[in-house]
Image (cartoon, rainbow, N blue to C red; front, side, top):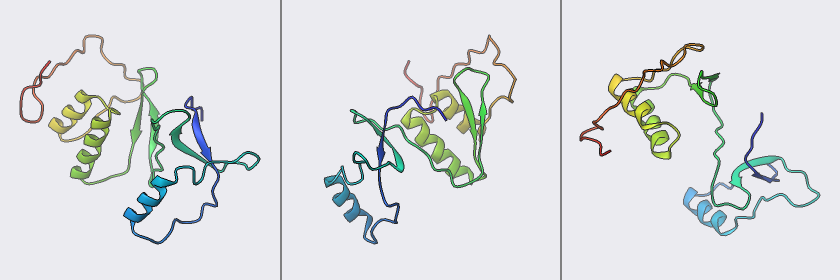
Length: 144
């Protein structure tokens, strides 16, 4: 799978982390950011969300359920199909993706309004004249 992000690779024994409160682990590991970084001559066995020379992350998701990745008719876009979940959990996931900029505002708001998520079937092109605009957010008019 091609990945054009210059990710930091790590070397670790892959054993479970310490059996301690999460807060304590976060404090200890934050103070020791180089804890697993690969050393020269030792092969890396992990890749990370860390990007070389940056404070940015490129998240990697470990999906623990059936899922399907389908190319969109728009070049460079795709649809990720996830397993069933309760509606409130789906909207919480969509909200997090919207806040993070992973899905467009229109996708989020239309999904909330329609009560679900919808995508075109593979091979169905987006109509040229489709310029749907919306003026209301969840409660109030959106500033333009």
